Image (cartoon, rainbow, N blue to C red; front, side, top):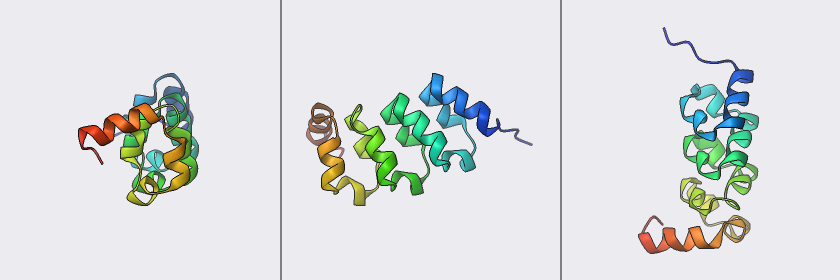
Length: 102
């Protein structure tokens, strides 16, 4: 049986290292507060969030300004959202487009 960390333990972990979200339970990858704590620390942690939260504008807007590559992890709907695209770190987004990630 897999023992997952508690919500409080995961919140503390992602505050220190956003990549800890990768090891969280699926339930906590779908917890908006946990994911916001991670993407605020490092925007690309959006890659480890649930599909539902990759389609949450608040979460994506927290991720993309400081790490434009996070835009590639957002839902297609939000990749096409003007507010989200304008909030993204432009240098990172241009590198994504140039590399064919979009």
